[in-house]
Length: 133
Length: 119
Image (cartoon, rainbow over all chains, first blue to last red; front, side, top):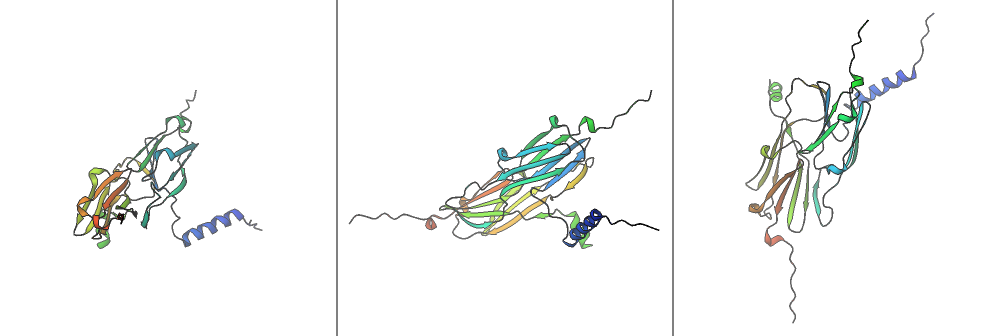
């Protein structure tokens, strides 16, 4: 006799997959990013034109980076809008990193409307060779 | 064949814009992240304003791309100018990936306060 178990989690994952394919590619949350890995250093670039640097907040926990901030119009009074296409408001994005990073060695720059964060791999995440005595 | 050709061309990006009016000017803001002053051109020609900027890709074959949610390429957009704009006084500024074009209105269309003479 063969027993088959019903796995509700598998069923749910399958349903999620079916939904995703029905609605096309998942929506990209603001801001759009690029993540690259070179020589054990991860570079995250986020497209953030016209953001006040002081509103930007970066948080790193283990192998995830959170980018949050706020973008507001510079003038709001005494003007009449003819066209409004640029996004405004608060944003928050969670970026999954491929490995744990060294929190003390993270650097970030903001220029030409692009935020660049470099995150070196944590020593604890690097492979170690153990000598056999 | 046509498709193959397209992949070799620089991708076109339509920059999102805000346009608003003040008493004296029409202001145009365009998001053009990744563009430097050297790669940006703002032209006025035959009642048309064209903004044109290049967002170049970092060509590094040794790095491993894990996520890519945006495209690099050429920002390009053209606007028709109203004849109420003083075309010779247009100026542009690029700051943190945002292009600001100030289009001053001609004197005759600016709001005026009319002095009332005492009779």
